[in-house]
Amino acid sequence: MNVLNLIGREKQLFAKDIAQYEDELVEIVSSSRFLVIGGAGSIGQAVTQEIFKRNPLKLHVVDISENNMVELVRDLRSTFGYIDGDFKTFALDIGSIEYDAFFEADGAYDYILNLSALKHVRSEKDPYTLMRMIDVNIFNTEKTLGQAIAKGVKKYFCVSTDKAANPVNMMGGSKRIMEMFLMRKSEEINISTARFANVAFSDGSLLHGFNQRILKKQPIVAPNDVRRYFVTPQESGELCLVSCLLGENRDIFFPKLDEHLNLISFADIAIKFLEQRGYEAHMCSTEEDARSKADTLIKEGKWPCLFTSSDTTGEKDFEEFFTETEIIDLKRFNNFGIIKNDAIYDQETLEMFSSEINHMKNNRRWDKETLVDLFHKMIPNFGHKETGKYLDSKM
Image 1 (cartoon, rainbow, N blue to C red):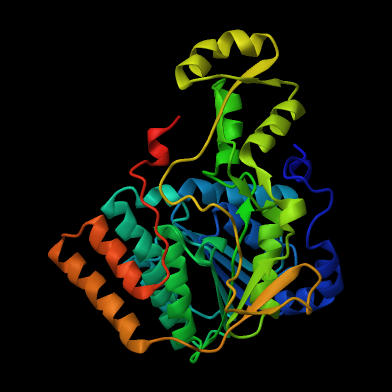
Image 2 (cartoon, rainbow, N blue to C red):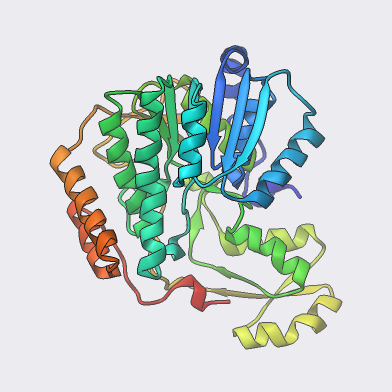
């Protein structure tokens, strides 16, 4: 599968920067100890590969998914083989006592990269999953940051999202609040982060769903009015690695992409995706129409598709990596942009947020409206869009 062709590009985005700084990256990695949290997710695996292939002194990987961890190890062994350093994986939940015991027993790391996240906009459909998203994206970050400081870790990297710039959904809002907590801790430890474009064919993404629909001979459904930026899995790993190792304290990295050249709709990708597999996209009018014609169309070399406009909660009309008030450095790298930050945060606001969330948890009672109101207190320009419709209600 030619991923670059599908997302409308011919070349790897960061190739020039990686070549320019490769010697420095190898020198740092080969003399350092790493902990990758959430290392078996799509971005986590890409980051782990970027570290592994540069022969680190120590590389420990933690993830809640036992099965994905097995595949990560198989993939590393099959692609790169072995390293001289200490490589181990641990199937742990970073919110657990077991993880705390693991970290307390060792904790000897130079760099910690936290790739764990609830990344789906659909996670805000109910208040319980939404609270878990707040825990994973904000409070697990705060907790692991504190542990890193206590052990004298040199640098802490945590993944953010493009949706944190002028957020309109709770996922983006949670990452924007996470960035506020990061700024507070940046006075005690060097931190950096990255705001991402969509990672093409990452686990659970719509493009990953295209592969599943092909395997199961089911219709492909996509919005025709949503245009997004994409990076490849390898590029996602490179973005995190460079931000972590070469970024200065409080830097937020992002890919330099051109809205005129690099924005592409999901429907256009679907058509290219099917062409690569020898199928012609056949437009259907309804879900039932697409389902009922699937077997017949596929035998004819056509694939049932349903392309519609988006009307679900939390969809942003356009993508952006930074706001007009943020200070941007576009000169240091060829294709990495950097948002420069001072340690600006409101201590009382952060404490209020933590206190209110703890109060809800202690009472075992909260609703989405209360959580949305709390996000509005944290993010004055929070543009949350509630349509009453969610992706789980669609095919």
